[in-house]
Every structure is written in structure tokens, then in C-alpha cells.
Length: 202
Image 1 (cartoon, helix red, strand yellow):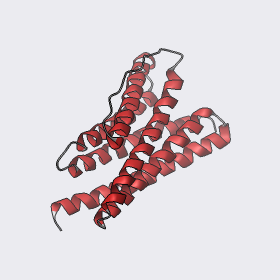
Image 2: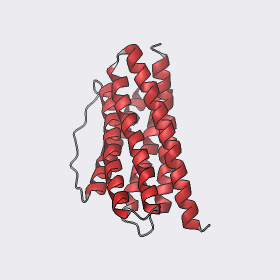
Image 3: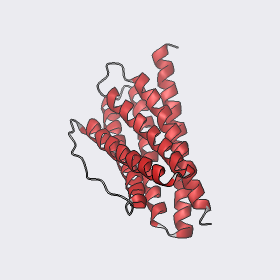
Image 4: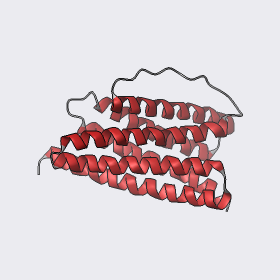
């Protein structure tokens, strides 16, 4: 088995792992909403089900690519990027709501290119915005759960940044594998504060 094939299999394995983690996070968030009826859990439920859909479509895109259905592979990755953008929007929006009463920031303008790059650019914007909010909130409150949130969001931002760069790369799979590693790290780090927050309302 050649090195590119090993990377391809590793990428698919990471996509399955990320799919499992995000779906578990969705179940916890949904259960939190069903118990507490707090909007934050509803927003996180949307975020993680969209991210789960993103990983599922990424996995199918790789399968279609292996089967040489390149058109289906391309459309799958475009749609997955759209769901990824929605997931990160709800994560960023949920966190912005939590810190809104403390401080405000103005929105920045965006320049987009094609559908995949456009969705990833929006995802990158949403996550960088949430990282900025989280870091300012941490320096004010010095909370351990906030620093975990910052680490999780940083993992998300590195994932999106590498994915975005890979769209311009001649050989993108190495960047995509590292992007998935950072995303899995981000999901785990972000999942811990959600669990702590959920437990505090049980």
C-alpha cells in the first residue's frame, strides 16, 4: 500500500471518529435541552448535528472518489462544507450569546471565491470571532471551562485554516489529515465544558 493510500485511509478513519464524537456531543446537547429547555443546548444540538452531517458527507465524498465518481465526490464536499459552516455558525453564535452582555465587537467583511472556499471562509470567520470572544472572556473571568472552550475553538480554527489552505494546494490530503486531527481535538476539548455545563443543571 502506497503512502497516499495510507493517508487516504487515515483521513477516512479520522472522519468516522469525528462523526462519532460529534454525534455523541449532539446527543448530550439534545438531552440537555430536553431536561432544561435552555436555548444554549438547542443551539449546540443544531451545531453538532450539522457537524455530524458534515463528517458523514466528507466520508461519502472519499468513498465516491475511490469509486471514481468524481462529480458526486465534489458535490458531497460542497454540501459538507455548507453543513460545516452552519455547525460553526451555531457554535460561534451560542458562545457570542453567552458573552454578549459583557462586551461587543463589530463584524468584519468577507471576500469569497468558490462554494467550498466560500463556506470555509465563513466557517473560519465564525470560529475566529468565537476564539476572540472566548479569550477576552477568559482574561476577565479566569475560568477553567472557558480555557477548555478556547482550546476547542482553537482546534476548530486550525482545522478550518488548514482545510482552507488545502483548497489551494496541489497535494491537499496531508493538510486535510492534519485538519481532521485538529478538529477531533477541538471537538473533545469543546465537549468537556458542554458536559460540565449540562451536569450543573441536572
